[in-house]
Image (cartoon, rainbow, N blue to C red; front, side):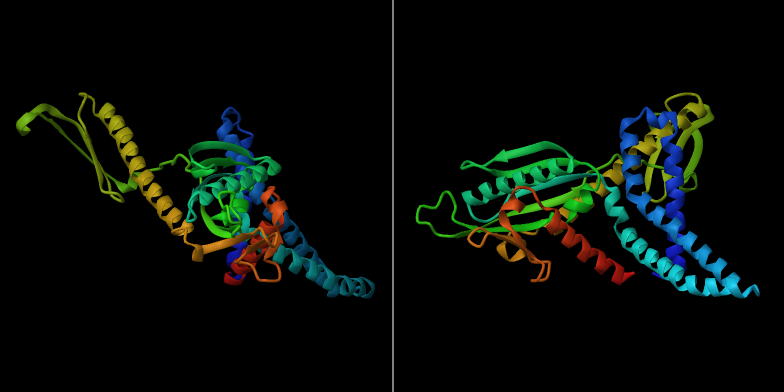
Length: 360
């Protein structure tokens, strides 16, 4: 990311924080708990970036002041400025690097609600038991993080566990921490259903998606064609000599509405706007649902063993995340199953952050 574009982005985020603080002080917002939670989550995500950006700007100002002192003719002050300037410049550079790291993950931190979906993969009854074990692992992790856990739907497996389970998880940084869990989770162990003591390989798939939020449809009036005509009756004859019927077309979606219920053009116009917004909302809602379905499909794959992102090896008491290098990709099994996922997820976050920074 070029320096000027980075600074422009940081200025934009700082402005967002000021607006959020203003909104949080609004009594109307204070009376809306859902809005308060959404704004507070967003604020928690961007506030560290803005704080570091302000410190960076302060360091730049301090460096400029020191450079001025180098040229003002006072030998003693110039000597002091010469000694301090490298330290201030290094601090500014360090702050900028920290800002970049926080910036590439700020959007992830801002999402405070996800849908977690688990499904038994290959492995018969053992796959259902394994899906249940994973669900319990995530519930324990959610408890440790202080997140709200709400079971939305579940289909129990005959031998225990689940064929499928869908959970809503809400809380600070929930997407940042759970977003890496999507994929196929493979377990190698002796199942409770195995009488010969043989190790079996089974899978469960996990999908993690931002929980659908009500779409706030804002229609640009310039995108709407409005025609005022006389009301039409059966067969096309005029039933009203005064032009009161309102026809609207939303150009981006092609959606059209016509309203002639009343003899008042103003009332018909208001009703037409309400109907248009409702239909445009429905259009974008279906579009969002389709995108989430596609995202879910890409995330979980088919559940085959070759698509695994992580393997849980009971014999070795190890969890191996295949997205991490061999030197940092192995973790002790029992703590992970007990919900202690922080070390593993932090490693994934840092790897992802490095990749995103490299792409800037």
